[in-house]
Image 1: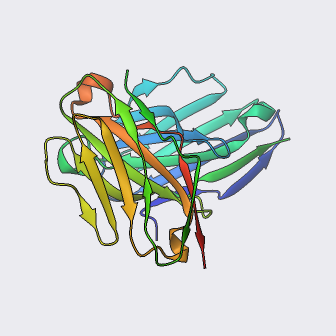
Image 2 (image 1 turned 90 degrees about the vertical axis):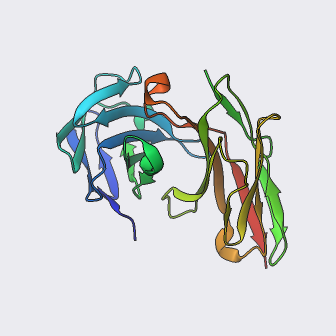
Length: 114
Length: 118
């Protein structure tokens, strides 16, 4: 069982739709991450939140909008996506430092853009 | 910037035998963390093993062990007594020790697919 829960598991949307991906953890972690992963490739970091504040944005297009409403929740709002945005989106969480810096990943959301 | 290289796109192993996955990295830092993650077809990235660079002793986790050669910047993973459930993509990853150095970023290698033959 994963300690980082992502919903939905699968999402199909058109290029004009607006949808959101959700990530939740209850491990008391204060750092949360969004990754994009294409088939047979490693995950690519998109955003990092530290203590509910955006600390890293890896030059992600504005059609992806992250939100961290509280320390347990992380959302990724999607709008006007392109077919090349079809991928597996992974959420992860970790402590900020010390022995707890290992990132724990969710199962991911498989996103398909029509 | 740090880079992580996994030179073996795919490795095949007979059930119950041993396989070793290679990983090399490039960094100018003296303190850092190294990880091996496993990603089965179920998609979840699962931590296999972690090594702190300041520790000389190689990390071990049940059937998984690493050979950490700091001077050579090498971090290989040995899977002993391979099981069918070990079939997955394996990613090597690097993280700076200091958050200010590179934030909370993991740098991943390209991955090695492990096939286990019954």
